[in-house]
Image 1: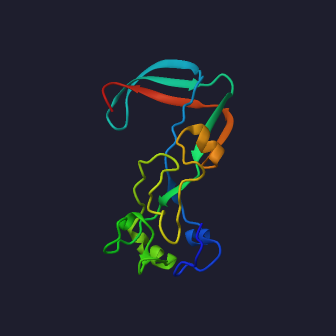
Image 2: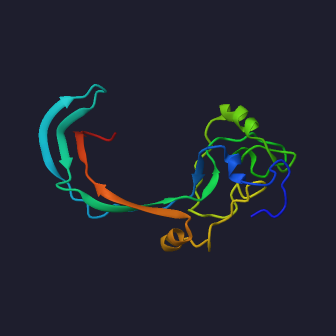
Image 3: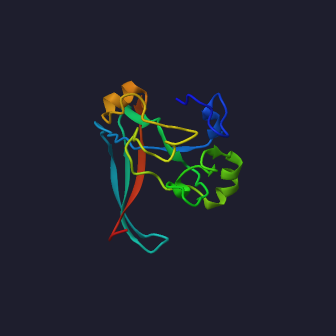
Amino acid sequence: MIGDQVKGAGFGNLSAYFACRQAWTGKITNYLTGIRLVGALRISPAITADGKVRIAKVALHTPSAIKQSLAACLAPYKLYLNGNSLAGDPFGASAPQLLFGLEFNPLVVLAGSATGASTAPSTTCNQAGGPLNRAPFFVNPIGSGGSSLQSLLSDGAAVGVSGDLTTRIKAEVLVGSY
């Protein structure tokens, strides 16, 4: 946490500077296991609208709902919206607009929104040293900073969700590579 007032940030809730913006997080690998599909393969030759040769149609579904658990990272790494690049800024356009070294101006970031979305980070969840790990944000790893799924969940850097998975898949079997 910040002990002193940061220029342009004032005291109080620094998360307000995110102003409901989207943020990229690091990655968590999830696996879907125990999924069993049943269905039918129907021979149905035809030429598709894009000129491919179809030889069959496939209809697959799960016979019953399957319990699955997934994890999602909650630790922000960088903003989804590109920032405006400033001379001498080590993070360039991958970070929020900072004026005069420390002052964050959310309106300037919105004015730079024509640059579009930033690229997704290739880091793992709760990674240190991201573009938001500087004034006025100081987003550091949460808890112990461990990278195992168990430590991410117990530190609060990730959340686990579970539910029932059901699916219906309809596909075409085409000749050649697509």
